[in-house]
Length: 487
Image (cartoon, rainbow, N blue to C red; front, top):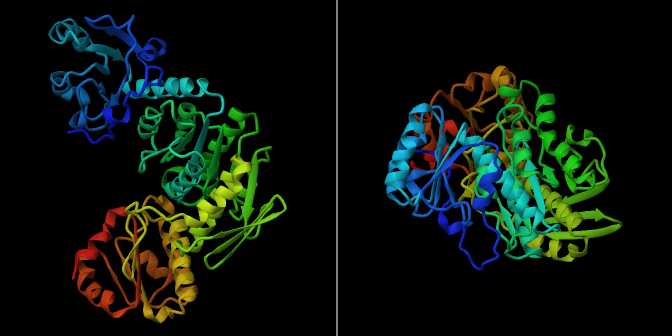
């Protein structure tokens, strides 16, 4: 079965006749379309394309786009969607399938069949056309791109919350982490007439992928969260990561002629080097023209000769308070007359559960992702929280697992994190995973180290009851969240 995100018909309920929709008329503008055939008169009557790429969730009347992956070809499931009254079926062309078209059209006269050379390219081009139609219908509409090595989803959720407080129910944001070459088009297909703002999260693994997403979404405003070592296995150097992430900024400058609002952390050693533009703002505790101060739950922002106070009692991590400051500055730059509303919303913001970093009682758990920058920030924030609670690090325990996708940098970066742990005065620590030996080069005498989490189970039972607070972080492959089920 397919393992691709889906879009269901519930995303598009026609509320009135002039509602913006993914129009069938767009099909005639697409360069990726090779042939269109069907028994019904699809040329004269416009209808809505409700896009679905997953046969498992397919509903009658939808358009099925048969994507192809390394280990699957969704055309193998086309019979099921046809029996479920597909309105349109899109699939890659070949000689055998072209010969089948007359028979398919005869058996399914209510279905439109479209052949293309590349169904993914079709999906992306259709999304671009829909985005163009959405923006053309209202010149005040805004497209915001969000990328970075860490915290993309956190920033996206914060921006969504703040802007939705200004324009209730008129803001669309990427759901979950649908931030790749398939997820971005599926997000764009959700844009309707009611939306005034689209927030598009953009992820990547390899060079050139941010440009692909920018070509689809055409952002005119945006944020880069930070530049860290995520995906350094593929991009090789930090400079290459900076260049790839900076592609979003380059596109915003181009699309907005330099006037698009773009806010970054000036304390980031790479982001502070972005070439100035009229819309670029840098904020920071040390650097940037917009200075911020974080004292406990209070954030002071010096913006346009005004001192603004955010008092948020729902966030304890220093880095997330700083993220909140940055996204609030972004929202206020975008809507300067709504600053008071932004400050009020920021003070009330609560982080949604994203099954990533979260507190489970006295245990901080992040088993979703780990790279050197996110690991360092999380450890530092945890230590700061303990200090604010007057909790000694002797009463805390740290479980650190593998950081993946570091390539040739794997040994040195695990060693650096372990050295950082040692410099912080942390003594109660266990290293888990295949890279534990690299951790041991930076901190040679942890409490323990294990090749697998199974070997760690017995010790874990004692740790979670003995210590006041526990920190657990590793890449997804270790699945350390299963530790929470061991008693």
